[in-house]
View 1 (cartoon, rainbow, N blue to C red):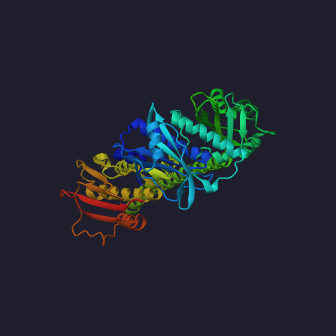
View 2 (view 1 turned 90 degrees about the vertical axis):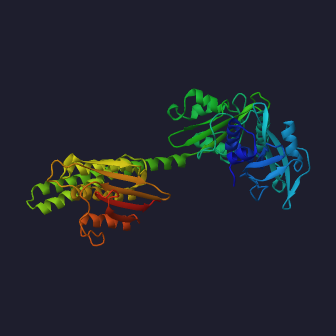
Length: 491
C-alpha cells in the first residue's frame, strides 16, 4: 500500500508545506470520522488534471464502515465521481446527489475541499453507511453538529491547526468523553462518559451550564494541574492542544479543538480521557526499570568484589601457573562487570557496545604482560546490542584480545611494540568483526579444532552455542601476525 508521500511524489504537484498540512489533517481525522459516523477518504488531484488518487482512508469507530476493502492507491478519472470534481473545482462542500450502492449497502457521499493558503489542495470524501442510520439521540446530534463545524473549517482552511498532533498513544478519542463548550467556555453538552470522568474528579451534579475552567480549578489541586495560561486556553476552548490534570487518585488528559466554522470562534470540542490506569502502569514500569538498573549495579559491585578477591588470592600463590589462571579469571569477571555497569546506567536492556569494546581494549593491555607497549584500535561500530548478546560478546572480545596480547608478543623483549586492530562490519542481518595483531603469528601446525587453550575454548563455545555464529582463526592478511574472525547473526 503506497504512502501519502509516495503518492504525492508520483502523481501530484503538491509541495512540502501542502504535505505537512495533509499530515496534520490525517493526524486528527479519526475525530472527524467518529463524529460523522462515516468513512473518510483523502483524494489528491493528479498533476495532469485527469483525476484523483486515494491517499488516505479512515474508518469510524462509532458506526459501520462503508468500505470493506482499502481504497488507498486507487485512481478515479475525472467525470466518474462528479462530486469530487465539483468540490475541487468550486472549492465548496458538495452534498447533493442520490446515495450510492456498494455491496448492497446504500452510502451517502459528501465531498469536502481541503483548503490551505487559499488553494484547494485535496478533497475529503465522507461516506456514511445508511444502514446504520437511525433516529439520532442528543449525543449523536451533538456529534453531527460538531462534525459539520469541523468540515466547514476544513473547507475554509481553518482546520487542521498547527498545534499539537492528536495521534499519540494517550490522545483522547470521541468515545472516551465528549464535551461541547460555547465561546465563553461553558459546557453546552456533555456525553455520559464525560460526566462520569468529572464525577471521578469529585463533581456531584451535571456539567451542563458550568464554566469548565472554573469547575476544574475547584476540583483539581494546583500541584496537579498545568499553569493558569494553559489551563484557561485548553478548558475555555481557545487553543488546539492537550494537557493533563487530575487528583491524587485520578489522572485525565483533556484535549481542546476550537471551532471556527466561518472564521469566528463559536466554542470548542473538548475530549476527555481517564488515564489513571495508564499512569499507574507507567509508574510501575518506571519502578521496575529502576529496580532492574539497581540489580545490574549490585551485580557489577559483586563481580568487582569477586575480581578483587581473586586478585588477592593470586598475590598469595607462589605457583606461576595458578597465578596466571587467577589473573585470567579476574579479566573474565571484569569484562562481565563492565557490561553490567553499562546496563545499570541504561534505560533499556540494550547497551552501546562500542564503549564496552574500547574499555575492554584498555583493560587487557593495561594489565597484560607487555604493559602499554601494545595499542588496541577499533574501526567500525558495533552499535547497540541487547544485554544477553553483549555479555557473551564481551567475553569473546576479552579472550581474543588477551590471546593476541599474550601469544603475539614476547614479554621478555622490552623494546617490542605492537598494535591490535578490531575491525567491525555489519552486513545485512549480521555482525562481523575481526581481531588482527601484528605479532609473531600462530604457532606451527595450529588447528582450532585440536586446540586445548582454555580461552579459545571459551570463545568457540560462546560464539557457536550462545551467539549462533562462526569463529575463524588464521594468519593475518598481511602475513605478519594472527587474525580471528567472528560472524554472528543480529536479531
